[in-house]
Image 1: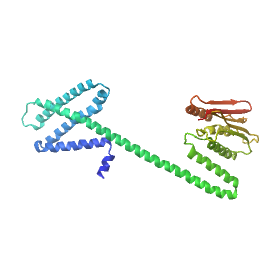
Image 2: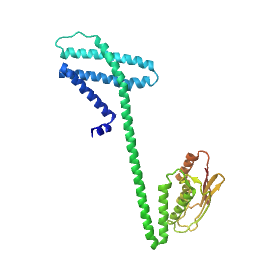
Image 3: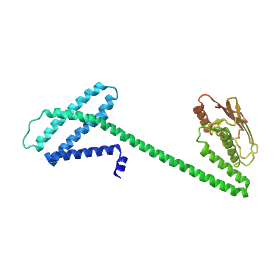
Image 4: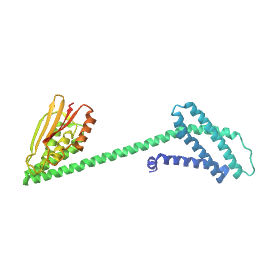
Length: 338
């Protein structure tokens, strides 16, 4: 249990634990000779100077000079820093001892400066071990966090698959029930299920078979027809290699644009022409529809986003055109086939 708690501690908490342990060991070693109050004061002073040397090196001197290839400057500054620490520590301990603990004033022992300087060198060398330990525990903490996030993501992914599959199974059950009463409604449920399965299984992929994309389009078109009062006159010409691959949802943007902006729900003469043809090493996709009076032709965000997506995928190796006349609106793109 204790080991588990230590493993879960942050690097800062571990440092406080190390310093607390050092403080107690140092205090206990001084108690027999100096008494409690004197041992407590000098333990605070010694621990403070040790911390100053360690953190002064690993957070200031080492990253600002040694890591920036200023090694000579780094060595000189370290010697000056250790000398200042030794002098300051010598005079501060001498002042505290004579002021609060000595029965009569004692002469200043100059050799303590040399002693504290040599002690400072040892602590300075230990600071590198301290730095490595901090880096190790920081890296371990980040690694544990990444593993935890990865595990959570995997669980969420499993949940995201469980929920759609539950919905697919439910739709299948509804389909069989509806088939007995209304075969047409059952067929629409089947198309809706296929569209949802496409979104879950195919759309996250970088590429899908053109056949899969065409099936998705045909299902989408059939479901859109439900909202229309009259039948539409749709011609879908297609000729492509069965094993050709394209990014998912490219064709959808142009077809969706037709049903958003190119259909008059009150008219019985909606004409739509869709062409998907392979031309050598390229694939061209064209949609054409009559312009509906009172409606914008459809050159909106959907087509702008499609152009941006084509640029991201193909760079300059694509064609995208929008043509408009008084009677019709046409949009088309041409992309290379791999």
